[in-house]
Length: 384
Ligand code: UD1
Ligand code: UDP
Image 1: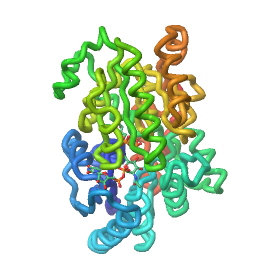
Image 2: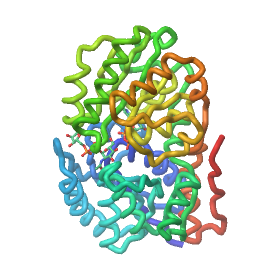
Image 3: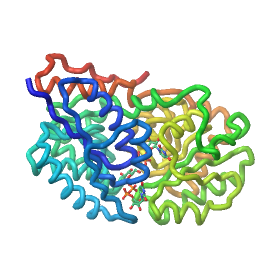
Image 4: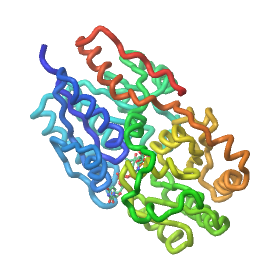
C-alpha cells in the first residue's frame, strides 16, 4: 500500500507546542510520509518551540508582521499554502485548534479538495466574539474537517450538537503528551530571572495574558489587579512572561513596569514554562493552554476571562473564572492568598485533558481511517 502523505500546518506558539508531539509520533510510523509547513504567524515564539522539539519545517511561509491584522494573516497563509498543496498533493492536512493559521490551513486544503484532520476539535463557548476570532475559526474548521480529534468527551458532545458525528475520536489533548516530557524534579532554570527566585520562601503567581477580546479596558483592569496584589502581599512574586504583541506589551509595561515583586520577562521556552507552573503557587491567565497544563500539576488557576471553552477543570474545582474587572479578579485572588482552606480546595491534581497518549491515538485513528488497521484507538476517558 502507498504511504499516507500528511502535511501538518501550524503557525503560532500554542499550535506548535501541541502539534510537535504529534509530528514526532507520526515520524515513528512507516505508513506515513510526514511533512511540516509553518505559516510563522508567530516568528520568535514559534521558533522557540521548534528548537525545543528539534523540528525543522519543510515549508516556512514566514508571514508574520508587526501588529498584523486577521485578514492579513488569513490571506497571506491561504496564498502561501496554495503553492505547498499544489506541489505536495498530500492525502491529509492536519491543523490544530482555532487560530487564523488553523482556519487558513483548513480553507486552503478544502480549496484543493484535500481532507482535513482537526486536532483539538470541538471546543466551544457559543459566543462568537469571545474568544475572538477563535470561536468562529474552530467552528468553520470543524465544518470543513473530515477527521475530528476531540480532546475530551465533552468536546465530542459539542460536535454532536452541530451534527458532526462521523470520524470523531476522543484522544486527550496533545499538550499533556508534551508536559509529561518537560517537567522534571530538580530542573534548573536557564532564565536568570527564574533561577534567582526562592520558590520555597515566596509565593509565585504565574501570569500570562494576550487575548484580542481583552485588548483595551479588560487588559488594563487585569494589570491594575496584579499591581494591587503585588503591593498588598509582601511574600508574593508575580512572574509574567509578556507576550510579544505590542498591544499587550504597551499595557503591561505601562502599568506594571518598575512595580516591586513583579517580574516582567520575555516569553520563556515551553520547558521553562512547564517547570515554572510546577513550582508556582497559582496561575492567573487568559491562555487556553495554561488552563489545561496547570490542573495536572495541582495548581489553582484563575481565568482572566468571562467564559471558557475548557469547563472540565472548572467542574473539577481547580480552575475558576475570575472575569476581567479589577474587582472580580481581586476578590478571587485574595481568597486564594488569604485562606489556606480555600487554596487547598483548589490545589489538587486532576487530568481531565489527557493522559499523555493523545498523539498515539491520533496516529492510530488516521491509520484506522485509511484502512491500515482494523482497530480504532481506545478513547481517552478523562479523569486521572
Ligand atoms: C494568536 C492567535 C490566538 C492564540 C495566540 C497564542 C489568532 C487570530 N490568534 O494571537 O488564538 O491564542 O496566537 O499566543 O490566530 N508577535 C511577535 N513575535 C512573535 C509573535 C507575535 O512580534 O513571535 C507580535 C507581532 O507584532 C504580531 C502580534 O504579536 O503582529 C500579534 O500576533 P497574532 O498572531 O496576530 O496574535 P496573537 O495575539 O499572538
Ligand atoms: N507558553 C510558553 N512560554 C510563555 C508563555 C506560554 O511556553 O512565555 C506556553 C504555555 O505553557 C502553553 C502555551 O504557551 O503551552 C499557551 O500559549 P498561549 O497562551 O500563547 O496561547 P493559547 O493557549 O491561549 O492559545
